[in-house]
Amino acid sequence: MTPGGAGSAHRNHCPNCLTSLHVDVEPGDRASDCGGLMEPVAVWVRKGGEWAVIHRCSRCGQTSSNRIAADDNPMKLMSIAMRPLTAPPFPLERLEEITRLMGGDGGLEI
Image (cartoon, rainbow, N blue to C red; front, side, top):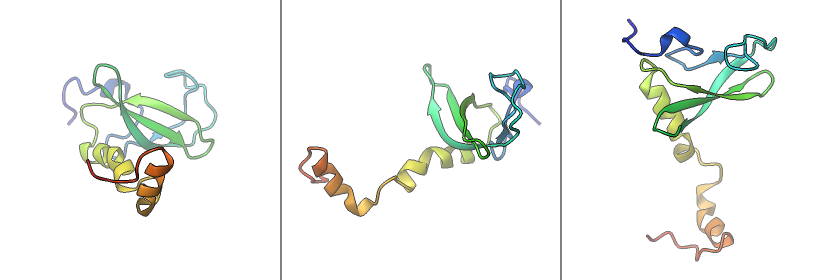
């Protein structure tokens, strides 16, 4: 059962896996003929603290941002939010080298 005010009246994604379908050119217009799966690839926090999911189309690559609903799977949201920390876009063993290249001393001490 969906809690009241969950935002599900205008839902565009599955509350469990957070995947959507690429059906819009502009939000709500249903004008896209792509129809690809919009996979959740990131989350971000909008001004005011509201979370949103970044979706990327597996067919054409287009990205979009969609607000979360109150009944969206919190573990799935957190797993997406944690991706940069659990799978950084660079090898961790090169962290000191990368820090030096950016002008730091390469040390990891705080």
